[in-house]
Image 1: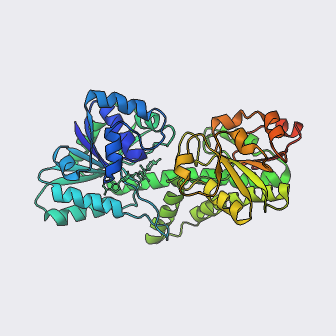
Image 2 (image 1 turned 60 degrees about the horizontal axis):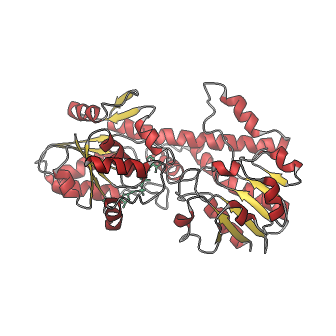
Image 3 (image 1 turned 180 degrees about the vertical axis):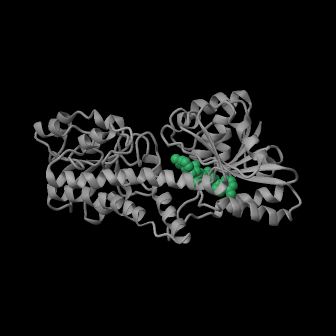
Length: 429
Ligand code: NAD
């Protein structure tokens, strides 16, 4: 099939590359000329495991091309996926400027039937708005459908998640759109849930908010564990064996971040409010999440007494392992708080340094964990990178000024650290 994908960020680029790999002819569009130029040269603008190889493979097949020209993409494809960003605005509701701009560009280029699919995470009823605006701009003269096909991939395992989803949700309001989307997803073997547009839009927000709630739940439990001397990891294991609960998203720590959970929780609260429902449960989810950073800083202050002029080594900037994405990462406000208190910050992240440099110009970037630890008064872990689980603790101890470990992701072994003479504080352990 001939498809286009508008927006070549984490979701759009993976979508375009995977569809092309599955045999579709795909046009990937972005308004960012620099990005399109480097993609055409084979450069991936962000870190995502396996994406560079996949792009190289599909490039050879000739089934994927990049352009800034939306009208050209609209002319040449039967199905158009919108994958632009939907960031949070000040009040928490989603900023739909980019989605609206794409809808308008599509409308102005429509000359014959097209299926327009929102894959970006959008508030319920956005599909209706897209449909109304395109109808107004085309004066009802061109047939088209709008569908919602939310994306559930995770950065860091995006390709695998895209190709092997737990389910595919198709929010449609015509047989034709369902038929076209089923054709697009023909090679997939997972359950396909067909709903109306609003239901599909809600499924995405309800899912992300639920996962965020699991994280805040276990963080709240971690706070009780700290008070009574229990170990939250074992509590989570014990809960997780229950198949009604599941172990995923029950890792206590400094809280969720990224470009999705914080904004999607805020957007869902705002959507609910607009619909006349105060979603207090989710307000508390967001509050618990933000409080986790203060808990980590409290552990640090307890160990160091004052933070002014102390050198703190921060391991991990990305909001989670296997990505360079620092949007909404807890590391950013934590580092800013350390600076406000007069601490000197040395950081190491395996891949996120280039994304962080502009936002955090005042920290010293180090080539590895041990260099970051050199001369430091404390080391705090903020991302669950695999390599941090295997740190050489005796070596760290010889490099550090004070042997203090604050484990914001519970990746280290508390008894091993304590046996070596470290002051160790995890989250809920
Ligand atoms: P992103 O910020 O990485 O990429 C968005 C891209 O859209 C950018 O390259 C930007 O230049 C481009 N763009 C913006 N306006 C445009 C326009 N008018 N025309 C053409 N291109 C335009 O965003 P992302 O992380 O890929 O997220 C996209 C959407 O998918 C969001 O709604 C997000 O909530 C949702 N989502 C994200 C993830 C994730 O893990 N990142 C997972 C599932 C769903």
